[in-house]
Length: 217
Image (cartoon, rainbow, N blue to C red; front, side, top):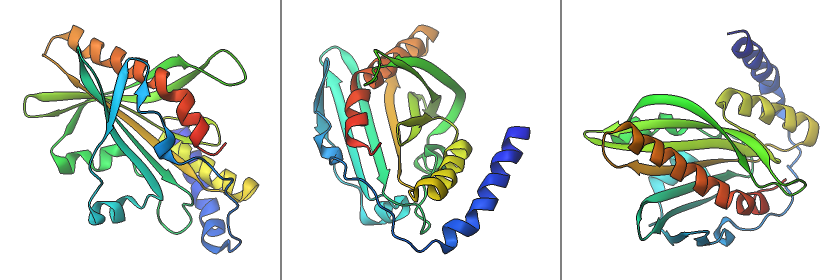
């Protein structure tokens, strides 16, 4: 509760700055999201159809990637990356939980997962991401998602927005991305849920270095 109040105060204090700052943001060039490999470890990817114009208007992204990755013997893994070059004009990142109920998916479990990923300067680093189980009818899926900006990986939406305000003041930048990974839970046994979590984690570990290369640091 105290953390939420502090974060809210930071957001309110920075709202005026974001509203009145007129200097253009200087975003360093980044590679296109399309350069993220289609072949990732044991997974082979394919592009999904592009979003309709009304969905893109709702998302407000400057660039996005929407793919499915698959292997011959495992359920698919879907990857969505939404990149925002600026969040000053109302196009801010929204939690996936805001849109999933509209598609009929309801969160039934909520957790966070911490695991190691490759890092450039050292052999590995630990990140913490949101991990949800969502359900529609009898179908269940495991979701991992996080917010990423300037090398930081943040699970909390509130903390991500606080960093946005901080970076706007410190760096004159509000660019950030939201990354979401989804994989089906096959069956209703606890071990199937754990298998889905392992699969999602292994995929994130395999693709994380590529994400770091294309997102501005």
